[in-house]
Length: 581
Image 1 (cartoon, one colour):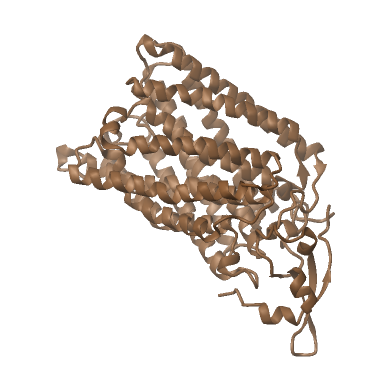
Image 2 (tube, one colour):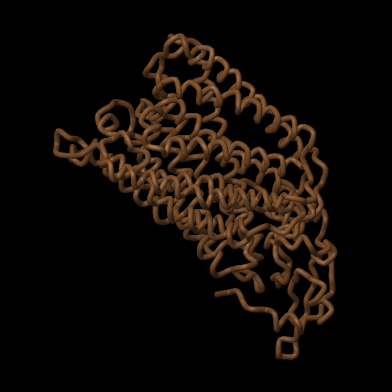
């Protein structure tokens, strides 16, 4: 393990303190110019930005598809698309948003950029494999685009059999694209686990690991263990369509419910691939803007691992109406309630961190507070769906649609946006407009609740999801929901505007504009090509807000190496060790 107990060594260090360069002339964004330099880079920061560009594109496509769906649902009868086109649009919306945005957003974008910086490493453990993961993602996306333009897919994003094995459209190209995408997820997870184990800077012990790293560690475990199950499932579906093998087709001796077991054994842990990285982001943001040491460090860290473990045991709650035995339904219902405990632990610890904190209402913190509100609503409504007697009524209704979006968009997307706004100055060295960021957030919060709160009511009254037409009594709910979707669209347009403006004319960011104690903020903005000029020796923890900021300036630590020479390292200085030196 690369992490050494540096306590003894640090006492022999002579420390000359310095501040990181505020606005460096040379940094990772301008050291290698040209398209080819970007396409062949192995710099984790540039790869993270390429992922950011890719998922922004797919988020835009998925968002446009969502607006098309909501526009069609303005009236009970057909508006401008027929039933077949409607099925294709909601299939593509779901598949693109889940497989090409939500799953890679946390690990591949924020994880790629921030993980080595928070560990004090120069890069991930396998930089070339990291670049290969991105290209595998792109290849999977190309197969999906090919499926869209060669017949489309109308199965729903779950590709349920027996319909997906017999329907028209280019199901094979779509499922093969998702199959390829899984390899990107697996390789990224493996890369992160090795990096966290082997490339931590001296002094970063397990109890000094940022909680964002614990979240990415738990996520990586899920990626490695769960993703192969989806890959095998989609491969079996492809074989059934191409070769007529009776795996899921009852006419050939197969079992369509078996597909559901395989699919949800992956897809429920995949929910945590989407959301657990968001938990890590929220821990960083709340501690930074509350100016307090995180409450319950080990409780939050271990709860991420607990979620990863229990998440593998609850897939059957998607199948309460699929003919399972009563005993199986009871066990899965109990486990569904159980997985809420580690999540609740996180929420109460975040609230305790904010309690009596010196809270700074900057945009990242506002996103974190919106996350707490919306994700908690999503969690409570999930408990309703975990109750057997209630789920029988609510299953496959708009209540499930609303719950899913409160967890995924109210949870993961809000956490991702909190992290994006938090680390934007570090990524690009530019500050965005706080005024327009708060306007965008306000519209997003209003539009989101306008869109999905009415869907809880519709679902409770029996409105089925995925229906092209509906009875007149639900029209006012659908219209209110559609107006909310348009408001969200305006919010995202404003967000894109001030983000792009910041890149062109934004105020240069200081090395640490938020006053954070975390290691990634102790280097320049944007970072050096190799993140730090020297290998950091870390003394302070990432949440030591009870210590003055002046004690967190980096320094050059000089130690005798035993051969008549001196080694120079970067050190996160604290007063005690400075006096000892």
